[in-house]
Amino acid sequence: MTISHVQLLSLPVTDQDRALGFYSEVLGFDVVNDVAMPVGRWVQVRPPGAETSVTLVTWFDSMPPGTLRGLVLESDDLDRDVEELGRRGVTFADGIRKEPWGRYATFTDPDGNGLTLQATAV
Image (cartoon, rainbow, N blue to C red; front, top):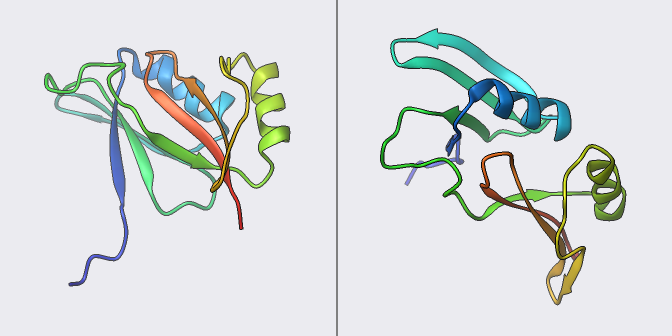
């Protein structure tokens, strides 16, 4: 088998500009691509230094905005990141939770897609 990594995840959104603002300005993702294509725009972002990126899609009927769950983002300092994102308007309804494998906090993007910010115990 020669699969080496996950390259791309499609994330359904209603408004690419609003989603781009959230993922780049609020979460601090780098903009990889933002180019015109026949069905709209190809908007691609990723955390700084990451291999896997996210494309903000509006054109898949089978992927309604707000239906993605389980996008997990790793943090080196969960407390600091939750505090900073809170100042940027992100709401963590359940605060930080602890499990045997680490700590995490859940939130949603402007479309209601579910994300988890976690710090894995080492």
